[in-house]
Image (cartoon, rainbow over all chains, first blue to last red; front, side):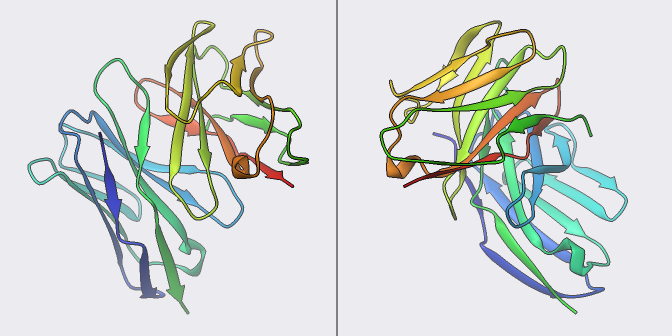
Length: 112
Length: 111
């Protein structure tokens, strides 16, 4: 079945860039998503990318997609303490399904 | 961001009791999804619901679970006889063509 893998932890200094990586196995993925989860809270959709794109930029967020290697990354520029959270990568299967498969999440810690 | 509303935000129940979790998805959406997240683990798909019928379900979604759309706006997940291992965050999701919005979740604690 589909699988999504992420590293579990990332620690960066305030003001630096953070890069969170994700790999997935489903070659028929149509959309890939990044969600942010703060402690005890829900899943906030940060950004997403369609599988025929290789880059998407949205303010401080840059998503890069390497479809050949099935690798997705999220870059957060000028990381702030408020960015400390768990970041989930998720992929959506092919046409006809909106079901998402999630990674385990990467806990981003921002050091002041 | 469009809003998906879930109630209650937290529910504590005794093992063996029935619980009903509620969701108000984005209006006019036809697809609804339930996911759960056991503490410290992945967010897992439970079931999808389209046009008043289950369209997909996972292995987790066994006979103790059911979903209903009791009226035009509400969408429920019922767990008939809760077990300790049902303790988790339960999320409702309301997808659009290209995005998927989640509610804030219901934290279910079974004691």
